[in-house]
Length: 371
Ligand code: HEC
Ligand SMILES: [Cu+2]
Image (cartoon, rainbow, N blue to C red; front, side, top):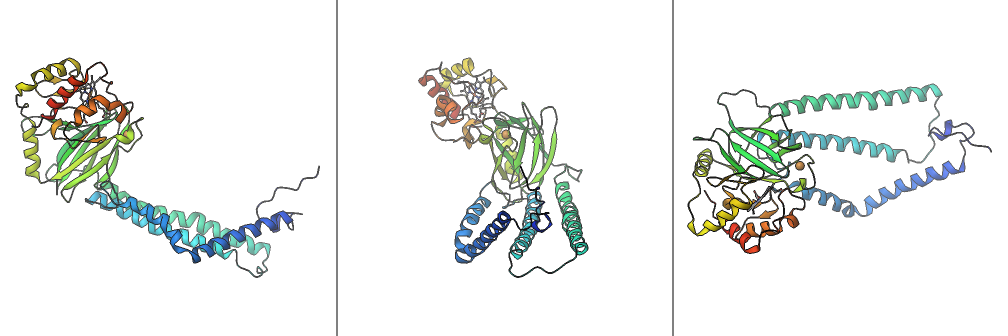
């Protein structure tokens, strides 16, 4: 059977294939498609703007890198805008070239040598020079931006906050708190207007620490401590999110970050130290907690478990389950009964063996834990 040789892509250089009707049809079809795109952009610019608008809707909110609240994040956002502008230029130039190939009229006569020379220019210019310059510019700009997040020595050593990623929650420690280490979970309080060094690691698998409005991110690797320096320039609440896939509930691993003046942070830390106020009316609930929960959870003065989050200040947290539910009256009991439905597969066993009334009582007691 006769077979036509494979075409290299340039109809005119294919021996015995130049005038193939197949090819002509195909290039006509492509040409038609190109014209159709141009026509539809001209006729309905709004239809093209809608998806763009939807995309831009992701640019606001408490985890937006495009709404920086600190120097490190601003550097990252600038690099991002620079890349967007430059690649938009490249994209537009390519589209213009592409549309240019659809122009009518005959091609100029060129010798094979000329064709090769022009081809070489495109390869050297577009294939080597352009990417080379792009990469050098990006590095010259991006490397110093990353450098700013390194915990290099500065005059006054910054506050250190240790963050440990667990499946699927955050352990947060303040080792230098006056009067002894303070531990909390799924919430992070930091001073505003000064750099803070975060020392991060993973307890089980690799997670990543990321406060998009402040900068980052950085991997949390078991057996290793990574450091990153971030600063919040404005007080407020920022979202943080695990940024390295770490299992089924990775998406439900949110951290509530709050930046406030240094004195308020000190007061917040001081308030966390004393043991919870005695609540005789919850004595029975506390006993149930000792029996069912103490192996995994710490409550200052009651238990020392360290498998799950420290619950010593659970009553004043903003969320439960690392952002799965908002904290409000009755929320803890609700979580205790249905946590495997709200966060399927999470590492706390279902409490099917404990009756609802007991869980209600434990929940009511935990809600009083407000240092
Ligand atoms: C086998 C260990 C284990 C036992 C037993 C256990 N928990 Fe947990 N608990 C966990 C883990 C792990 C999490 C984190 C789940 C997540 O968010 O992914 C958790 C989360 C929680 C939370 C939410 C904490 C937060 O910061 O959002 C509460 C409240 C809680 N447990 C209360 C209890 C109570 C009350 C009991 C006893 C009835 C109990 N736990 C028994 C391991 C345990
Ligand atoms: Cu993760």
